[in-house]
Every structure is written in C-alpha cells, then in structure tokens.
Image (cartoon, helix red, strand yellow):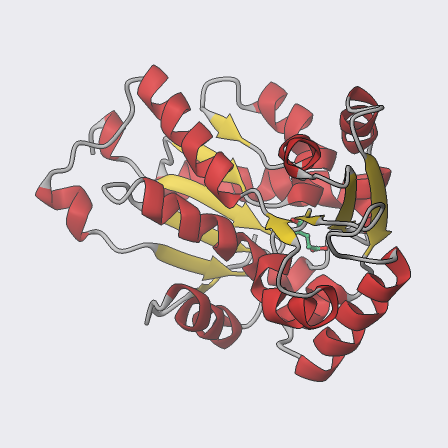
Length: 273
Ligand code: DGL
C-alpha cells in the first residue's frame, strides 16, 4: 500500500468518537478509517492520567503496527488532554490530531457572553483545559459542568440514566436561553455528548447554540494530510475500502452505535490490547 493510501486511525474511550468519525467521513470521503473503541476500559473521564496515557499509547501502537496508519485522530477530549503530549513525543513521525472543547468559537458566537461547558471531570481538571480557559479570560463567562456517569450511560445506551443526567446537569448549570446572563451557547466537550442532543434540548430549549469539535478536527486532519502529501487519491482502491471497527468491549454495542449514529451496517471485531 502506498503511503497516501494507508488508513487513518481514530480512537476514543468508546463509541463517542463516532461523532468525530462521522465528520471525518464527510470531510474526507476518499479516505479509509480504522476506528478503535476502548469501551472495555471506559470511562476515561473519571480515571487518572496514567491510565488514559497508557491506554492511548497501547492503542496507537496497535494501529501503527497492525494497520500501518498514516495519521492518527484522538477522537476523545479526555485522552487529548491527558496524553497528546506523550503521543506526540512517542510518534513524531505521524500527523496526530487531537480534540479540545470548542471554547474559543463559543466565546465568539455567544451574544450573552455566557457559555456552558459540559465535559468529563478529567478534561475540566486538566492543565491543557485550564490553559485554554485562561487564554480566553475576559471574553466570556464559562459555566463548567463535569458530567460524571454520562459517557458510560451513553456507552450502555441506558435511556433512563441519560435522561436523568442530562436534566440534572443542565439544571445545575443555571439558566439557558437568549436573556442577558443566560447561556445561549453550550460546548459539548466530550465526543459522546453530541449523541444526546435531543435529551439536552429538552432542558435547554431549541435556541441554544450547541458546539462540538468533530468538524474542526476533520478540517485539521485534511490540512495536516495535505501538508504531508498524504491525502488519498480518489482511486478505486480507497473508495471501496469500508471503515474497519474494533472494540475492547462488546462488539454488538459498537455495531449498534455505528448503525444508529452513522447509518452503517458493519461488523466490528473484538480487540485485546
Ligand atoms: N469521549 C471522551 C471525551 O471526549 C470521554 C468519555 C469517557 O469518559 O470515557 O472526553
């Protein structure tokens, strides 16, 4: 396989990264992707940095050695915050794209200059996030909400729990809406949360702007591939290769999630790394 026709690796602690994969497939339809859901070791957001970094290294090693990936997308805010520096140091040779909560576009978009941020505890406590927050000092008020349990409820497709947690966390954050000092913009700072938009909308209403990071990550991936001369040519080989799915959890869970959210009927494989 020539350099440009190798696949792109994408990983998350579980099914959340499918929200990023969806944007990647739309932005780069000629590319092949290998997706790894580390559902057997989720959630990352309530674990320490060492756990998340060890897992991120193990998965990247696997994708490089077994799939010869040409680039890597860390489709997880928590893993990006905890491990991207270590990954960049360990794999200087490959384009590596991370994701972080969309605070900057949110501050620019908000008219009330009051922005809600839902993310994992790990992301919100990380140095990387705190530095991002400090860099936007004075541009908006950010209301931060750690969402313990929400990512795992989405992993388990536990509708009752999802509904209860979305209601609880949005209520705890304060008023949403277009009135002065209400949050008119909500950052979904975990890649799992775009999949519970309708549950969130029940509490925050239809007019709050929701921001997720999938599309900017996909555009950044395109830029890095272009710069490295690694964009796939739209030839038959690449067009025909389907996305491959692997999980350290239950294969059925990943298959159901891919069918539900990406409209892909696919078979996932069990992975032990
Ligand atoms: N999807 C991950 C993120 O973007 C985290 C979910 C988890 O806690 O495992 O932060």
